[in-house]
Length: 159
View 1 (cartoon, rainbow, N blue to C red):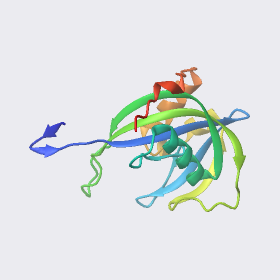
View 2 (view 1 turned 90 degrees about the vertical axis):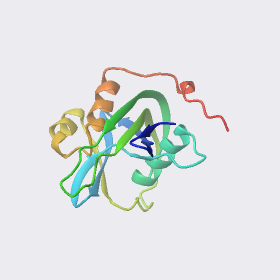
View 3 (view 1 turned 180 degrees about the vertical axis):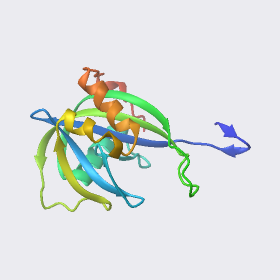
View 4 (view 1 turned 60 degrees about the vertical axis):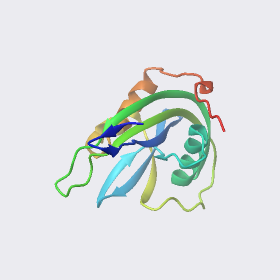
């Protein structure tokens, strides 16, 4: 347990997938605090769920795509900046996975806040860096493009 200033502290655990098809990356455009931002399919780990299960679920819910995970890209720690309205300042621990698309259900209703899915080239995604939801978006893509892959069996889920 970690305590700071007498309070229990725990980061938000999230997952993300870097999905590639024909040299393009699967992204989502989502509305966050009134702004349209770009992210990978990503979201929070739910209770009793493995990281792998969370990555598959979040990708399906946010894009309508079922994917096959092909590797673990990396784990990233980030603290969001504090905003003028007092929001932000949250700590995130993101686990990013490489994946390939398998099947798509275009009739699937996407998660609330998701405006659309996009298939962007790495250059197109980088050009939109000011709109990335966080620096974690480009960092995971950079590591993926550099060939960073680890076996999925690094992710152990003990029930």
